[in-house]
Image (cartoon, rainbow, N blue to C red):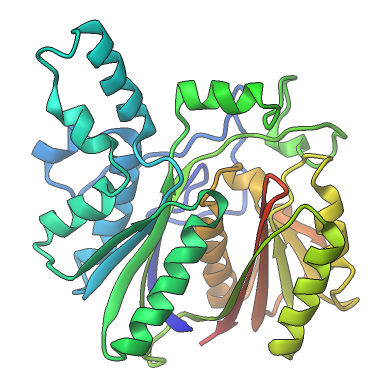
Length: 342
């Protein structure tokens, strides 16, 4: 599909500047909040007006855009700047549609992240935002692959961003997707209960068709919509048949929700006995575009040829050439991404 040359990530772990994943940072109050760094590549006049999602997205992207010229930007998000949306709607009510602050409206749109980076860098190329809930980032990757077929010499900035909004968190929690009883991300996989821990973050990548100097390659991608674990397993079997070869690391989105464990168990059964099994949502939390952070983590593992022990579920190994990412959002949206060493 395409090669990954540079990447940047903001998460609950130290992943932005000096990456250190050896020691797991604990969750707080059943939340896996992102650690925001000092944003050195974003104009201060614009930074102080940005909402949390916009800061994370633009800050992560500008770290790469300061060193690279791209022909377009593609961002995946499920909620955009939802906190700014809520603030703006409250203003409409409080001021009876009178003298409203335009900043919150401008920053509440889904395309604000890609649009802001385009304006800061004066980039007039392809600028798109994909909003597909748990498949938002996967659709970004698919769109990028199609663009690179049409424009083989181009380079693109792609990524995924989402934030924890107070009001949206309440709604999703009422729907039963988050834990109500206190639980630490250290114990997320040990307790047998429904629900998980909400997370947030951003991951960005510079991608193109050039293998020289690349860190990794996203070789293949597949999206599945189903509630049937056997159907999901069969789709993974077909995916592996289309992409033959040894999977060294199976990086799965198991999130501690006992209602979803059947999907991961079914897919695990297709892996070879020696395949290393790993999980990532205890470190990043659950959100719709967390698969972008999983791709960042895969690139990190392929580059450094290691995976910190707290990610490992089974068969710790020290050498990886192929990583299979399986993510599942609320038992309906499933995706498989095959990542290889460049």
